[in-house]
Length: 118
Image 1 (cartoon, helix red, strand yellow):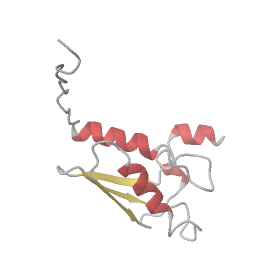
Image 2 (tube, rainbow, N blue to C red):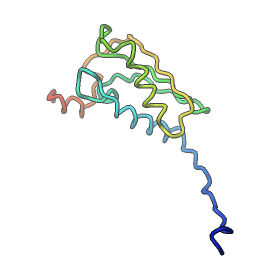
Image 3 (cartoon, one colour):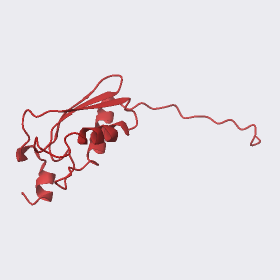
Image 4 (tube, rainbow, N blue to C red):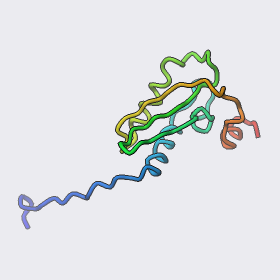
């Protein structure tokens, strides 16, 4: 078969499950670091909830370490951009919440170890 006649066969697009998409979103969240503490926001315990609907729209409820955090106005947009970059995500919304207040108990053991708290 000549090159000009060669037919390109595309692989069928595989749509990951909602569970796999959630894992991919968590991976993306782990690339975003708190501006004041050198730990990613997921392991720091700032992510309270991740909801993904059938349309692959992601809604994340998160907090900050303190209400007076200087990045409170801009940081949710940074998180939205990280989520939106995940293949398969059709839209992302980040809601900043203050209840319950964040405390160190929300941190993963890996984060505590990284900060010398274990």
